[in-house]
Amino acid sequence: MQRKLVLASASPRRKQLLEQVGIEFEIVCADVDESLDENQSAEDNATRIACLKAKEVYKQRPQSFILAADTMVVVDETILGKPADESDAKRMIQLLSDRTHEVITGFALMLPSGETVTDSQTTRVNFRKIDNSAIDWYIESYTPMDKAGAYGIQDGMARYIQRIEGCFYNVMGLPISSVCKLLEKLGVI
Image 1 (tube, helix red, strand yellow):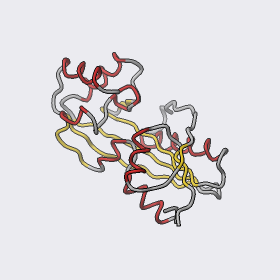
Image 2 (cartoon, helix red, strand yellow):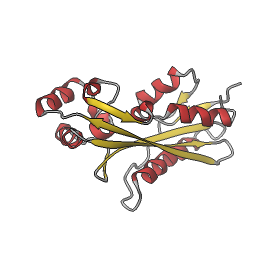
Image 3 (cartoon, one colour):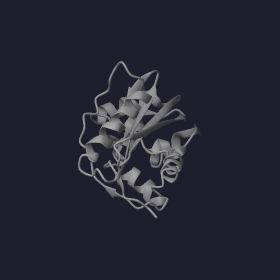
């Protein structure tokens, strides 16, 4: 028997991943301050923001299990969030070109008791060199503005990815195997 699960996210990719593995859930978007704490690591920031999202939605649905996540891209110890505009998206992709970066997703599951279980996962992604005309093509052809690091591993940027180490789905925004393992352990699914 499945208990009520609420996804505290407007991300179409997180929604797609939960649907892909047959989990029933509803979506309630969380409006929280996603500003980074410069004194925290990317992993701690991602987990903290996921907790903020879960707590915000828990106020509306205290009898449910609330799942929230936050994803960050890190290169040279610099955290890349969502780009502010096309120029920022181009800058981010130029930073990622011809090198390896980390994608960190922190997730939080808030239980009806008010207890919160958290975890995070890191995936390393290596891009081959991407020239400026290809970056312009990508920005014009896809929707990088709603993605950390200005790219989606599951879209046109796939042509530039040479190697990944870790969970592919983590880069999409939710380490689905780890999340499912937790949901199974707690009897949510």
